[in-house]
Length: 148
Image (cartoon, rainbow, N blue to C red; front, side):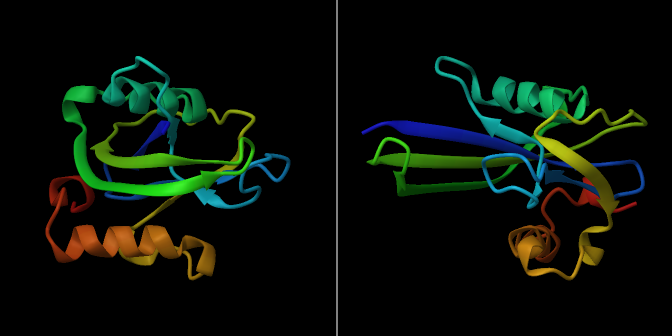
């Protein structure tokens, strides 16, 4: 059974705000939905290096892997529709803080916004990010990143 590893990053700025990006409406995978910087780790690539690479490709942000904290992990078996085969999906979410850097979105995304973790948009599509940031807050995880 194949394994696909996805590494995403919760990026906080110096004001403790979380970066959310929106998938382009022309993107073939979840068009118009909110997203975090990150994506699939390439075969043979170190997971943290994949998270840093994906964040750079999607936002232009240069992340310091030494400052990234693993805050969430999930493993599940799912159906990969394009090959009609069950595979292992591993999702890892890191958190980090960035200084003042300009955002340069890739063609995969068409918008970015910064939000306090307790003030994410009241929209059902943001449910998983609200759940995740609530979990971080309630369990005092990575508080140095989002508390100012």
